[in-house]
Image (tube, rainbow, N blue to C red):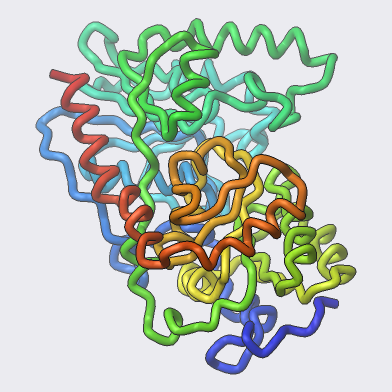
Length: 408
């Protein structure tokens, strides 16, 4: 079982985070995925763009928990009259109204690895409708979508990352085996060859812009993802006045997120830890939590209100992972919670080292524990100012500028 929860980790109701995990779970809204407008706790919508053009918004597939889905939802706020397309929507997802492809009516629905070879074909046979502007939200093959006449249609693509299983198999090992080397080369050639019609790319970070240049030979705007910083910063007084006596890890429980390292860092620092999220590594993390030398509390699927409480009560967010961008560190900073993480990837854009967090060059738990001991040097008032750079309003303005510039 999980170790006893220290008094400072108990919710105002007197319940521990473990007890609340089931009672307050909301799988459709974690982590950072907005509720539908009009629902309690719905995020501040991005202001709509003023355009007379017909617009299509295209997304890979719709899941319940992804940051890419958060971007797509905000794109629908910026372009509220746009037609919306996706390959399919998972059963536990709550997407905005959209049209799904014929893959949604086959056994391939939801099986991303098996559906991968069919995706380029699907994106070329999605609809016969014509649009003035097509904007794809792509982390696999959505950027290859081709609707209408390319001489009259402007194809723009917002890229979360070039498909990792093709271009970075060291991170995503679905296509990393030696038997898949030849198919991977063929899929890479298709990935590039079927996207020449894209007029302009936007990357979610400098990291992704560099990969687009390296893998596809194309330049890209940098438009960071939207984060509902207003929601996370506007916490009730009871949340904001917590003692901040524990460390926090938030995210999908998969290997590359390094939650085992997060536990080791908490042990090295001698501080209690809360892990919030869900994923296939849950059983292993529970075993590690049970054997840890500090109390480790596990919360499964906390809703965004509970997640905000956890951010405000944490001494620091631990983020020892190389992410393309990373929405979680921005949410934490909106709650005046500093970030201790790797000096790589998106953290180079979202965290100001020595001001809103401390960045570390190694994966050694001792180095991260030493960084935690430096947190008293930071000015808490500076931390949410950095988070404000990534608001939904900023995203809407930048997307509108991109579209207007590329379509004039």
